[in-house]
Length: 229
Image 1 (cartoon, helix red, strand yellow):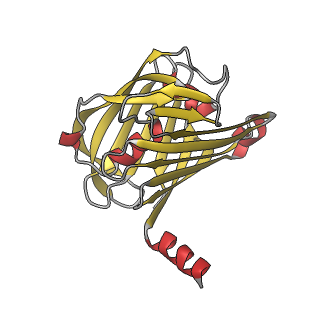
Image 2 (cartoon, rainbow, N blue to C red; image 1 turned 30 degrees about the vertical axis):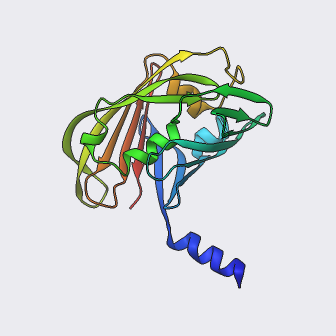
Image 3 (spheres, rainbow, N blue to C red; image 1 turned 120 degrees about the vertical axis):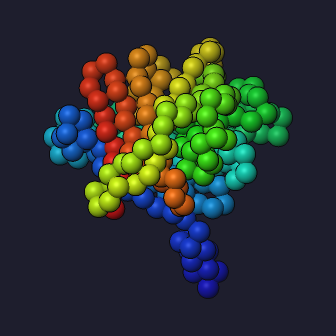
């Protein structure tokens, strides 16, 4: 009975959404996102089609955060990209350190954010609470700042209807790399910080707020993620 109630509560207070990722219009990956009211966001990714043959990948990411401030409490990832496999987990301790795998300790500001907690926050707060505000940022030992720049409000097609969305650009500036955990990371985490990459999001205004569309414009190719409805 206890396990059943736990499962029931998890289902009732979790919001899931799926996305299709394409490169040059070619299907490349499937992404599942789940946001829990308790303050947790999860992503799973699976490459598909020709991309799964050339760059097979099946990754999982999760982050637990303060449900009011969206500041990080802990996060983890499990990466399987061909022969490259990686597991990372970090937790903020009571002394103000982000502790990785019980051995690497990184001194962080009082409230720190990651790409995952930022994605949770943009699906909760209105644009005027986010626009141009800098947030202390951390990614696998690297420290910096991130911000959302509100570009406009426009309609975005979701496959069935036109949805009013807030359009953002996401800027991430890394200022300190001395504690970087590994030389190599997964495709997603590397591209998020790559030089010259433009990151854009279209988030529905109507509640529940959802990311309807996202793009990564790299120097090699454009990546488009669209919501499945």
